[in-house]
Image 1: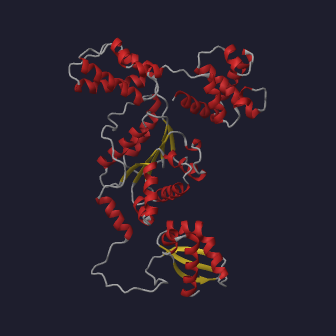
Image 2: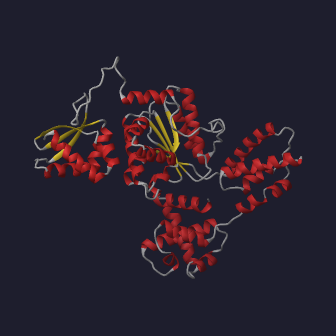
Length: 460
């Protein structure tokens, strides 16, 4: 194939793909040779070649064939030495000294400057993280990653509801790594920021700079990864960034509000890669953990509000009443101390109930049977009318039993009352459904996971 032929094909590709796609993905291609039906092109990086092969390989092959060439396959290899490009050469003065490669320059810049991540919160360290049974495994795993040694599980995937400590642990890992290993390039950012920077790179036609920069880090930490679900181009880039770092044995830490397999519209290949590492659930807080968090926070406030007295039983009262999440719990205590300081009064139980009346009312919200039925029907993708109807198909009967079980667990309603809400069923039917789920939970791990997820969603 002559340079003239390739030049004509490039013009056709520009018309088909548009100026931006052409400039980013086609213009850097250098035709090498055509041998035994294989058209060989040189590319800047293996990631670049993989992208072009998947997205434009067939376009290029068909255009080569339409030009009269016997091409069976198009292949891409990384150029290891400079070659003469197919477009007219431009004379350049010889450099006085050997210039660093683009990748090295990017890595150097990343090491010398702050990486384009989110700022770390100085409050979120391991010292300020209260450990209890619901989060002890997540804490231990985070500590292990923070040691900065050889990667033992990759990625570390932390998931749980709002305010359970995912972001706190990620910031703590980053703080510890920066302290122990200042030579490491640690990048923490939200999935939303990852998407924004990728879109910006597309707009500025600097995708290769984006790729080089994100692949130059030693530890990549992405918070709230569920945000990229359904965003095809961002998922594609995230997938390749993930693979590139894992191939280099670089550590990845991810967080989300649910397990990888439960994130709707997240590509299956991404779910599969995320599940290859250690997936850890931060469970809803229990009474002991909430009390420990309050005690630690109260100790900090005593130093800030000197002379302020908190009566016995107040912290225990809050730990019992506010069960939604840690953020609400800490926010309530912050308001309580500030209010007591302003009015110059001791923090008593009466003052607490007056000051936090709205928060306490919101915490008293009870889960209803109707909410349970709606959430279970949505989870198992069945109609709400079938949930309370007479159909006995297994695909409907099992979700119905799950809803019966949750209604017994999460509401104060009697079995006869629950039966009436399920289409007028007898209380013995409800009892049978509850017992059936209790039996299956011991052997069916998927069912247990479903129940944990549904409880979190209903109690959030």
